[in-house]
Every structure is written in C-alpha cells, then in structure tokens.
Length: 252
Image 1 (cartoon, rainbow, N blue to C red):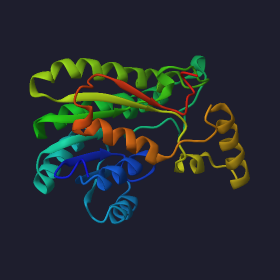
Image 2: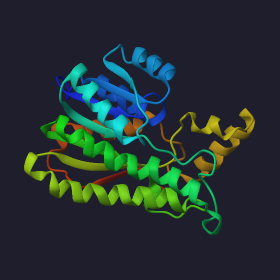
Image 3: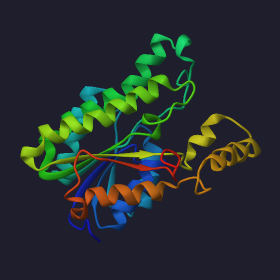
Image 4: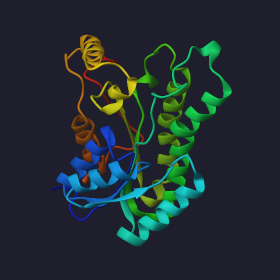
C-alpha cells in the first residue's frame, strides 16, 4: 500500500491500459478520479474500483473542458499527488494512413488526441497539483520503432517523450517529477475495435505475440505496475526518464 493517502487522476481510465493503471493505483491505496468520454463505461469502471475513483466525463481535446475537469476534481477530491496522462490512441477512422496520403483532417484529429491533449492536460492540472507530485505520461514504443502508416501517431508520441524532459526542468522547483511509460502491444479492447471476427482477432494477437521476445502480449496490469512505481517514493531519484514496457521488442 505504498500510495496510501495519495490522490490520483487517470485520463482514459475507463478501459484498457488506463483502467489497468487505475486498478494498480487503487490496490496500492490511492484514491481519486478516472476520466473518459463514455459515462457508462466510466460508471462501470468506478464500481470495479470500489468507488475509490470518481468518474468524470471529459473530452481531453477540449481545453475549456479540461479547465472544468480540474476544477471539478479539486472540489471532489482536493489537490492531486499523481497525474497519469494516458488518453490517446492509434485506432479509428483515418488514424493509420501511408505518409503520402495522410489528409489534414486525420492529421489534426490525431495530433489533438495524442499530443495537444497531453500538453494541455498537464498545463491545466498544474494549479491543482501538490508540490512533489508525480506526473506520468503514456507514450508508445512507436517512439523507437517505425510502423507503416503510423507517422503522425509516432510523431505525437515522440513529442510526448520530449515534453517530459522539458517539463522535468521547468517543474523541478516544485519537486514535481515527470516520467514516461512507453507500452508495447497490450491486450485491451482496442482489438475488438478493429471490426474483425473473433477468430481473426485471435490470429492478429498471435502475430503480435510471435514478434515479442517473451512470447506474450502485455496486460494492462503490466503497465499499471510500472506507473505505480513511478508514482511512488521508490522512484524519487528518477526524473525525465522513459520506461519501455514491451516484452523486449525494442531492445532485444
């Protein structure tokens, strides 16, 4: 229970990696808020977390909505000790396109979700963070490896990784640490969003598994474990760092 008494906010905390992170923070004694756009899944996730994380709906690409989010959060749970900026994604209409065909509408949507939202989530959170808080940004191994059709997504995640270094310097006077977790392939509901039959989804997962040195797809809890470490005093000497959690894809 290394996070007992700590208050956390997790964006994209209603499913997938974000929910896995919230579960681990909850297990370690933290309480707080989970954020997402779908109220139904937020309510369900909050119940899974024994009501210790209040559900707040917010479109993180909307700056005014972010201001309202942190104002509401402060009223409900007070100032934050842990901010996990997880919301983002590489799946959806127009998200994966060859570089020479990437259209402006898709470009704007992807950058809004995967970089602009991260930048302004942290900015709008700052007045509501305690000194010595921990900020964890979720990036991707796309920062380090080239994947066809993912030029915009990968660029956004590289920007997130770079942002952590700058923020670490700017926020050091407050004792606020900023670090990054870059997941590899994680078993989340994103696979169901591909619109494939169940048998085809299992085949896709197997293809990913074959590429991972430890021969298994990651679980949301794997990322939750890393985030909980970075949120805790155990990582007090780690700042501006990136932890790659991918089963060895990048480094082996």
